[in-house]
Amino acid sequence: MTAYSDFFRAAQQASRALATVPPATTDAALRDLADALLAHTDFVLAENTRDLARMPAADPRHDRLRLTPERLASMAQDLRNVAALPSPLGTVISKKELPNGLQLKKIRVPLGVVGIIYEARPNVTFDSLALCLKTGNACLLKGGSDAAASNAALIEVAGPVLLRHGLPLGAATLLPPERAATEALLQAVGLVDVVIPRGSQGLIDYVRQNARVPVIETGAGVVHTYFDETGDLVKGAAIIANAKTRRVSVCNALDCLLINTKRRADLPALVAPLASARVQLFADAPAHAALAGHYPAALLAEASEAHFGTEFLDYKLAIKTVASLGAALDHIAAHGSRHSEAIISEDAAHIDTFLQVVDAAAVYANASTAFTDGAQFGLGAEIGISTQKLHARGPMGLEELTSYKWLVRGTGQVRAG
Image (tube, rainbow, N blue to C red; front, side):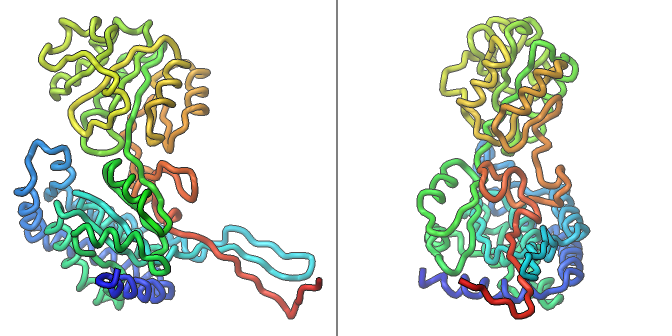
């Protein structure tokens, strides 16, 4: 860790300095950063092009890596959205006075130094920077080598903005892209307060298995939508198409359609919009029989067991017929990743059961899972979508990047016994 300890100590010092920065200063810096990003669009896109040239266009990560003027504009808007949100720091969670006169308050405070490990997702650089600054945390950004030029360009844009507002450069440190930096970050006990991995299941597993510092998992998204026997066909077709094709490389994209056996005859109409997007279907035997002759043969294949429980990150979708709501719930429990799950139904009792029983960070009724996103949830942005149950679950915004401490005021009380 010796080669990286200076980075970690600088971040630790920055986190202490950030604890006293007025919210107005942070908000002004974020708005300034949004303007700077747009002003340097050509520079950032040129550096991103260098990264894209090294990655085959067929790679599922290519879309996540790619920046466009529209995506940069969206990133800038997210910065402004975060700036517009109230700061959670200092919020009183609870307070009380004990019989002995001690006055207790539990208030929100920064986590401290937050390490974010991510792959080919340059947008994570500014999402993390914005949320960490707003919550008084210093961030150590460990992006993948695939996005090295893009990440470096974004931090180059951010540096002068931080300095103009009197914020320490150590508040947002981009670590070298090599694997050794990841290993050092995971071992930085006493210097790093928490590490958040964002990326493939392989990355998340590696971090969980090798970290000596606390980890908040942002798991892979194996996402299901169950079309119930009472599901509305028009609603269903629109929801499924949006969840699958809006952006296939994101973790809230649909991976498996479960359809009640009683609605098998409606399956061709339900998935018809997917054909124009060239979505390849892997259907179990009953679903395949219902689709044969009604869906392009070149895009229709029989499913194997391996297709169920797969996060495709591509124009691919598994389809399984189930006999009942209970069977759908069993399939989700066996193959889901506790990320996002949905039901399409007009049966209130079935909807209530699904919402209550499904164990996932976000559970939907008659809506697309594409909404599992920090900005969509009104959080401004997100640092990841947690699929674990301790500390945070679902899109992680400002509150999820805080801890709390107790403030105890007395008038000379001492404890007897």
